[in-house]
Length: 229
Length: 229
DNA sequence: TCTTGTTAGATTGTCGACAATCTGCTTGTC
DNA sequence: GACAAGCAGATTGTCGACAATCTAACAAGA
Image 1 (cartoon, protein in one colour):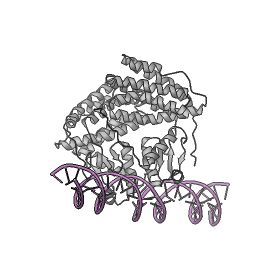
Image 2 (tube, rainbow over the protein chains, first blue to last red; image 1 turned 180 degrees about the vertical axis):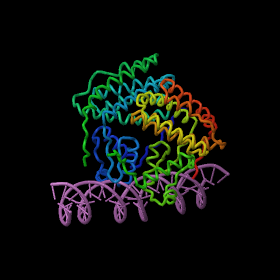
Image 3 (cartoon, helix red, strand yellow; image 1 turned 60 degrees about the horizontal axis):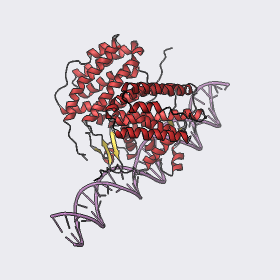
Image 4 (spheres, rainbow over the protein chains, first blue to last red; image 1 turned 135 degrees about the vertical axis):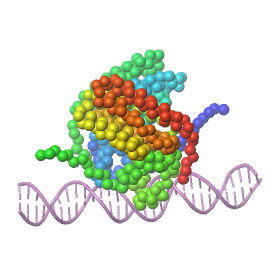
């Protein structure tokens, strides 16, 4: 008998859907950093009462992409150059650790997934779908975390991912030139499938530094933003 | 003129107070793992409506110490041996990183803080106040994170701390013998004040392993718990 | 002119009630 | 007795209204 384990049914609460909508809006840059979220307006737009909206906002505050000041409002987090540096330097450390943990766990399904996600990135690149390209690249990157079999590490990575995605989206938005067409993940994928763990760790670190430089140049250009209504 | 910079005023929303109350109850083990949180009952006990209570619970869910199933309820997270192992192994990695970042940042205020927090631990130990002892020990431990000057790392550590505190509290609760009177932090403190960073990192790792063994033996004895009303 | 007090409007925080969903029990049927 | 249907109670999710707080504009006084 085929072993088909059903995943949990979809959370069909308004709250969950609101969280997804808001998160997407923030991570794609539709909601700009520093921008204030007006509860009444958003709840009306979504045809929802303020209660589930506020609960959703609480989640996103804890997730680190919103910030809230009592009686003043809830805002999209501001992005400073330091934030980006901090996130990236931590990401390096976590990557190294994740690769170490995931390495002995690699199995056929892992290798399949690598290719599948790599393919998704390439497709998004061809389609010049910037948002999706960022999304898929991070998903490829997150594979080692999923295979590391450490729930706390995975959680930490997911939190970090939110910000990284936001940073990249802002970056791409700032320079509105088309996305690089070359495939920067080729080497990384090859190393993940290879036998030399140290090499993979080294590459992950260097690869990150590459993207980092670009992002940082953007970050340095960031000015303080005023909160918009 | 003395430069006194006022910190932000206290968040005097009911929500914030509820979060603090609930968190404390969970971290000290007053609310047991797996236990269900009945909204109506708690809101009545606290003389508060369900709205701010629910928002507070959302925060704690994202904080990782509560878990929620739509239309079923919100529960204190279950603690498995694997969770403890995962948290600790990540903690090791983060510690090493934090020491590295904090090392060049050490200043007179840092050394003062080390002593101050170390003193707090010793005092709690003398008073045989187990809860406070765990709290202060973690605060001493968290010093390197505060000095690392990496906001994302600090956040990550604080999330991790919540769980560690919970694990320790459960552990102490399980074996109701008094707390060890000897000062296990003496060496750590000395190394933090010393000149050899590598030695400090090494000790942090070993020291952790020590406590870890004890905690693990407890974790292994953990049985599945049924949810209580 | 600058400061301080006041007030109106907008927005967030909180409340009590209703709707949707789950759980366990009972009932009826075979 | 086993099993499904249906019902009652309890609990969570959502709503609309009210209270508390903030903001900005304006007026009064030094």
